[in-house]
Image (tube, rainbow, N blue to C red):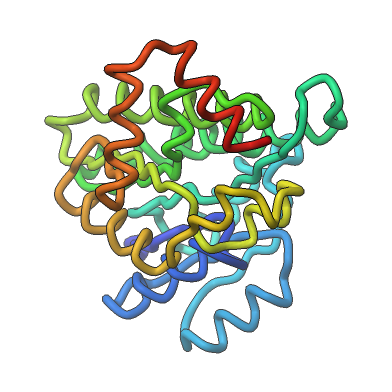
Length: 252
């Protein structure tokens, strides 16, 4: 019996992950929802009516491979991967807890990379597949007072663009979604719930819709919103020193 195609969404318990799940379910996808908080996943699965729930700390060593192994053992094959799991951390680099910095690097970069590497060979073999990596407009410049987070999103953008180019004739779509400030739990987790950027946040549903639309068209980069597009492009025209000072002022 052939494996059933599924859409796997990481970080599915809140924010963008929930909106991706709702949108993909509405179009008829069979879902695999992944996050640490099982109770939230179970509630979302009940809302959607049909979804597979995998509660896992993906940052744990070997967790990504174990997840894909469980998915395949259930007779499922990842046709769409939405790499949404991640978090940020606000504050001066040398004053942040080092264990939180390491956890951020693991989740935002290592796990995303591992999942892409695990599912892409099957997609290429089938000449069909979709990978949406959630980056950020933070990817386009250095980010004082969120240094590791900004650096991690630069990695995600670079990896996604390169993979998009490598696979452009394979039938596999690879897209980086680069939203600006979005109305999710991100700023609370980052420790900056009342900062200037948090006040500029836009609804998560619109960001998720833009990401899925861009993925369907196989766009390398999707930046939702005119203001965010201008912000991302500013790094092409302004000196890097100017950009990092602007970001520092937004975070102060």
